[in-house]
Length: 220
Ligand SMILES: [Fe+2]
Ligand SMILES: [Fe+2]
Image (cartoon, rainbow, N blue to C red; front, side, top):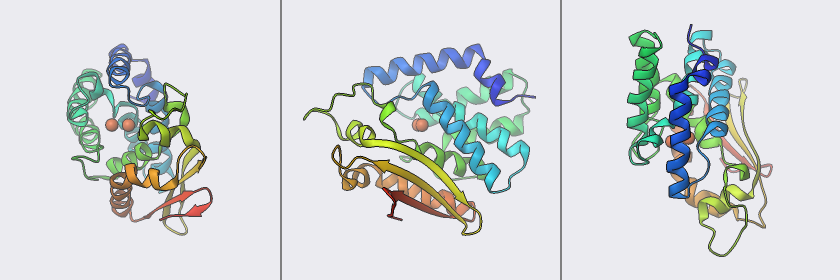
């Protein structure tokens, strides 16, 4: 059986994530490699587990989470589409059946807010996990200057972020603790507005409401 562990150990996946790092470094974007992949895999699995999905759906969700950004090895442009096709090929080569591999392909192909939409349970969990990973450890140059771009500034301010599922209230929250001396909450909204809209739609597909809590204040 193909699991998150076997995906992490796959040499082709390792090589693609390494190449992704190169591309992201050249673009001076926030970290998109092993750390982000592992966190998104874990949170996607956690969301699916908490909402009561099957062990198989959780396993496929974890794999989709780990592989979701490998398209950055090709190009940042349409990395969701290229990553989906790369993942499908790798999973087929590893012996995954067509139906499961295409579920993962579709979830990866729809994870980006520019052209993706929540299309399945796995896709929705992946979207919320991915958009919730905002953290200072993702910023390469941690020296805050007047030239620091807004993405780095928002990430640099975040000391803690995680996803919480409340089954009783049917609520999936992104919880963030941010240093408002580094960046204002409005900066966060400015760059993440589209992501929050996408998370709201993703949670709806799961039968949940999406929430955002910043510094203990509920924003959504
Ligand atoms: Fe992405
Ligand atoms: Fe991502």
